[in-house]
Length: 414
Image 1 (cartoon, rainbow, N blue to C red):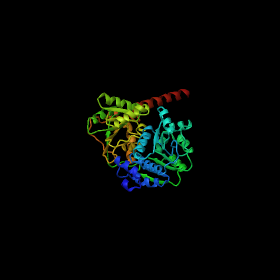
Image 2 (cartoon, rainbow, N blue to C red):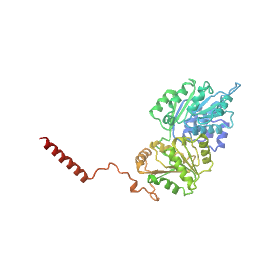
Image 3 (cartoon, rainbow, N blue to C red):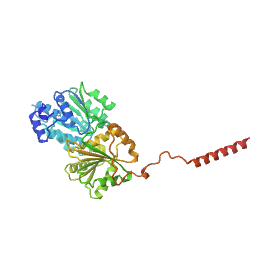
Image 4 (cartoon, helix red, strand yellow):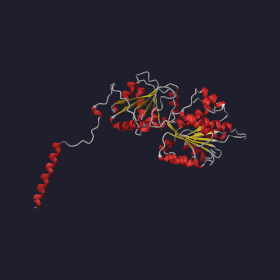
């Protein structure tokens, strides 16, 4: 369905056209009419399905249609919680873009930076607050945030908040919200703990599931390279000689690994930066901006830091390390092949990761094509020796010696 056929007001339609939005994604098509009618909503949608616009557009429109007449600083009327700084910033940018021709104001707050600019903006008044739970609670306890006027509450990527141990903070925030409000909850997966949370906050919600996590976007080309663990960096540099790999997001399992990969690439003249939780907020934002603007070709990230990275023309995703959780693989490769662009997902697999590969292929219900023609194939020495047993001769000799010893011991006691 086209955006122009949805019941969206002219100021937002105009902004959407400037952003190049013409056709609504399935989650947008199914959620926007429901949310405009102020019904509670639960959406099961993975990264890359357009869920930010799915809730941002209705929130903006409903707030715009309910213009305040009171003078003084604007009260917070919409609250959006996100698990990471990067995702919160991305959501804030979306609200700014879609609400360009409204008089609605939003602010993004998160930890890791000075709170003064954030508290100053809060004092001046905002309509929409986008926040990470930790900093949100901190400023609430300091009396900088008043939630009494919140009419719209969005919980984005609830499953990631559960993984990151944020659910208790989320529950504390929800307890401070007005009882009468519209609730919107989005999650890529629905584990029991999230279902329990859903049932505690929404009332007769509309439930929509789009692009289940077990599916991978058809437009994404997937490839698998079996490679020795110590040869992964060499294979990565070998692949990056191909200039058609225009922009690539490389996933590392650890922060230390991300730094090592980046250092290795920079050493051979490949523009790369790392982004992970140990980096300062300014460093993370600089790396992300450089990547989006094409100043660097490679961004190396851990899963948590990559949450919120949204680059429409990302050509490749490389799983340098396979994830232990198979659903994470789907989230990772969903970073490419967006907005109608083609994308490629490459996975490296050493012998220790074969169990992870098996789980991934079981989840996505397909076998990832293996690329045999490369100079860093897994060799026999990379294969670990499992359950090594003594040779037959050694075992027999040892058994015989013990048996003879026992006989001598028994004879001496007679």
